[in-house]
Image (cartoon, rainbow, N blue to C red; front, side):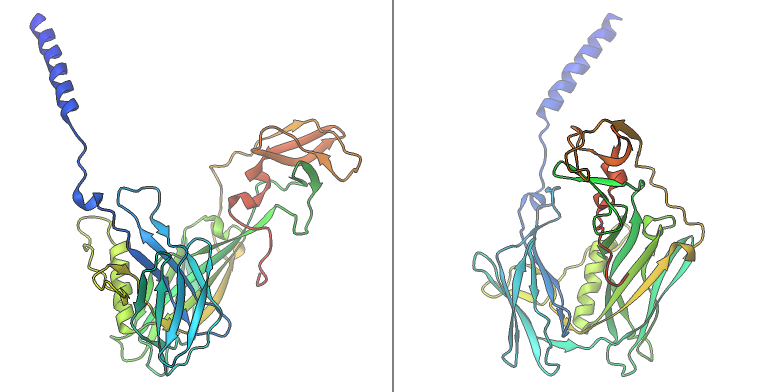
Length: 384
């Protein structure tokens, strides 16, 4: 027993010495701060739609706070070989927007960027591609709802396609409040813009969606998968809409986005394809060896919208298991104006629900009575 105790004490001492000698190891590749410029956007040939570009910087792998850092204070312009120049205005968060531009299809265009510290970047000149119409956007349900599109180019000139989409869905707050509050005053809500029961949330796609008809005898894309809405998702708890946009690509742009898709979406295990060197068409003017991430392309855009309502799908039951909506009552005091009442409840997580008597007010957690808390707006879209 004495020898066992001695062995245990010695083991603890040795372990302590071992742990005290350990130092964290930071591989050189992770420690180096590579803040590469990233450009994301397409020059849109349209009399109605603006072009929007996002500028950001990559961050260190050890930085778990942000995936990228917005690049603000830059100036952007698009220059045509025919001498046309179109300028962009800056928006918050590293976004830059132009007015709608009708491009000359016989001219080529390039993107010029000057960052806030004076560094200049330019893209190669690119041709303006013409996107054909989307023939249809359809859906099928096999538990989940799967959305597809069909398109074709009768002139056999497109061959390479890219899509993105915007989802909008209507949803309701768990409780339909008759009251809300603003700066300490209670007020009645109704079916006007003040209501907090019905909301619409819009989400932009982040997937890279590509298609090619090069291997086919005709320029036809059939049943291209767009997205999947999981069964019982809140997106189809009432009504769902998806707006799909279609762009035409050059072969170089298609190859770039194919590599980008592989590098960002298909790295689940050691058996998946490993990252491939990504080379775009945007370069530093004074330092050609500088890494710049992005591909500048120009295209018209075509689009088509689809609606799906809850009564069109089967076995769809959205239940929010993460939300507790218990209510409780408190007293209140009326102001001289009977339409407004003092709201001074100390727990800001709660909001008014309804009056339960002349001196009684029912309250509930705000996310249960105000649908806007969940990321939506109470303003119905014009196309709804």
